[in-house]
Length: 193
Image 1 (cartoon, rainbow, N blue to C red):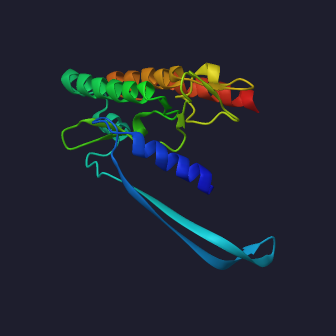
Image 2: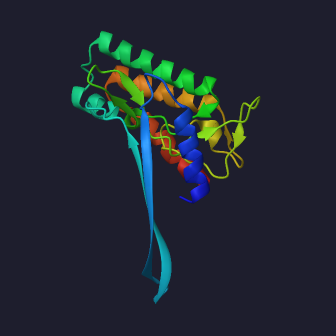
């Protein structure tokens, strides 16, 4: 990731403060100049190491909870998790932030099972009074990406996150990833080739 994208991600993370969003604590970076192999030669290269620090969320990902419970989550637990996820996504969208890779693996659970949306690596900030931004390439996780995203010039909108939310809610309630989701993602990916 280049410096511009890294700084943009940091700026976005600094704006976000919500009980259902994993809390950004800080970052550090280091650049070392080293000799590195490139095309059969040794060249001088800047080796960058960057670390983003977030709050510790002890109960792991929603993805693991769904797999481990095999559809046996109590309705009360499902409801609280779904409600929290919706509040977190609403907060992001209200602040012109699109997640663009929302899924159970990017939702962490704290010690009280409060969901916290994480992993903003693909997120985009919308300009004021804009409802979409054009993506250069389709990126995200197959099976959680909305069908309308697979076009020549995909538009990134809040609706993409809502589609992913729907798939996630289905997984929470059913207790696993539905095979039709996998089938659809295979069809879309083959259409891109």
